[in-house]
Image 1 (cartoon, one colour):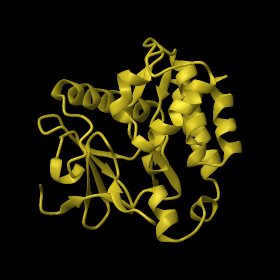
Image 2 (cartoon, rainbow, N blue to C red; image 1 turned 90 degrees about the vertical axis):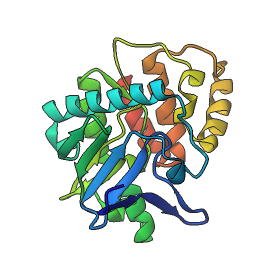
Image 3 (cartoon, rainbow, N blue to C red; image 1 turned 90 degrees about the horizontal axis):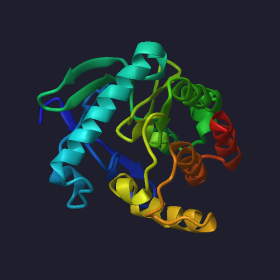
Image 4 (tube, helix red, strand yellow; image 1 turned 180 degrees about the vertical axis):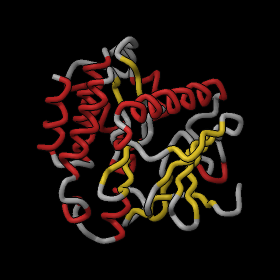
Length: 231
């Protein structure tokens, strides 16, 4: 690992440091001005809880990240971090940031999302609308998937994104992307709709289910606003 970078974890009250991402290895510069998505299965970072151990799957996740991050950048450059470099050989994306992610900021400052950024709702809705405009379904909606730079939220984590020409997919096809805690909630949600982890689900329905599942991280009414974009 380059000397100026270190592993990046989210420090969650009651849990302590937890992985910022289940798929790649998260790195941050010591001055917290650069974030690195390293598509490498680093056991030291994942602490033996590695989710993606198949190299071909890691390749796919890397390709999706680059493809859709750049696609958003090309049309809506203000909605993603500035890309400082894409190292295809080492599979690293270097992104310009300004401090820890949006989720971590509310923990570090012991305050609400509104206090971190009064316009956070409008900004995320605009980003999701941009995805819809581009024919993208993005399922990594966790608040740690946003960095705040100069008053603007910047979206990352496009490894779990699809074009509107793909699908359907089942939960079991993407189970490595989902935390154990979220899987428990997903199981109950699917059962309530007569679905299982093996059921092929069209991308629009999958997107709506994702918004529903993130009611654990966002206010319930906000998740309903997100749904309206795709309905």
